[in-house]
Length: 533
View 1 (cartoon, one colour):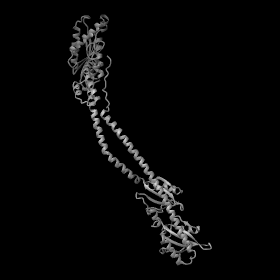
View 2 (tube, rainbow, N blue to C red):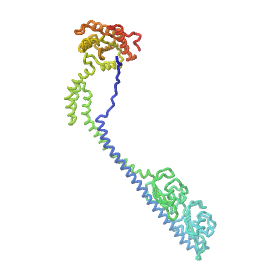
View 3 (cartoon, rainbow, N blue to C red):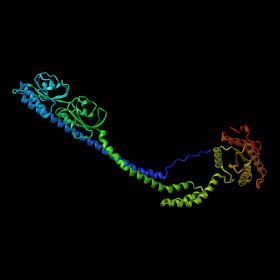
């Protein structure tokens, strides 16, 4: 007897129903374009805001560079005029002192004014509190002035007065062209000055600030006075402006903050003026605007989602009920359920009519088909499919059962002697006799040819042996019209939970073949010691 194959129940994959499909498609078709438009609009406005800020800072830095240059040229011009006046009074200390005071107070361009001779000796100073009159200065600014003997705007340096300053000076020549010394104004970079006022007073109130660096990347002006004199090297704007370049760029400053910077060079000194603003401060109004837009559109969006959900539910409800009906077509109450579906639109109404028309025929055919699939057409007994379903159920419920394997003795001789029609009648008769000895819950099956099986659930081995013997006697005593008497050989085995199900059928087959070898027309029962495998 061939081995039985036990089928495994396949899991059905979850499918997306129409309601969810409509919801997903509608929400996606609404939200994706909205999100794309919202994000694209944000990116465009963001870039435009960055570009506008960079351009504005560049223009502002350029304007401040020119204003600073104009201030320094004006300071040189003032000093130049005073140098001409002082040329004839270098021996008049009182005059030189008054002229120095006038220079300092008239325009407040300088924090202090100093008059020196050709050796650096201080002839006069204002204010006098500096207490450097009568001293010879060796500071960087004075040394540069004496060496150049021309108009000078010094690089920033630390003065003897402990001030970080810029020294702006003009030479003093006699009428005969002899170099007599110089008059210079000091601008204190860490104190309030005209330069500080020029650079610190601007119209931006949005976090923008300005700082100035010299050619050596030292800060000579910064809103934070403590940073004046600091040298900066890791700033793209400073690196470029120190090379004499003007422009604009996003950058990360020396403090690690993202900035939007514009920068320009002061023509007369080579200083760099940088106007910059934190990127986060620049984008903050835009981010606030986009959040405001999002918050104001959110209620409408939620309302639309609610309408979409309600509409999807209404549209999908009839089709879902019809689909449930189609799935349960073999149930008697399905027709009534389909009839109660409220199909309020054309497509669902037509589907409902078609299902109701086909339901009656389908229901009748299902019953017949189910019988045909699981029944041997010749004997009316269960077939191999029916047997496998029964075994699967017994295993799932852990129901013990006995197996009786049945085979007609010398069946080939019957076919050869009396023909296949007679052989078919013998098979039908044996099928009727197997049913006759079976209980209501027993499973009689034809496995093919002259081979039959009888499963007896909850029957112990000895009871199954009695049923097999009763069948053997019944067959032997029955006289058939054409072929006369026939006999059968039977093998009996038993299965219980935990044993090998394949082995029980092998045991029944083995007992059947033992009966045939033992002379046929007999029942062989598997020994009790070999039942549990």
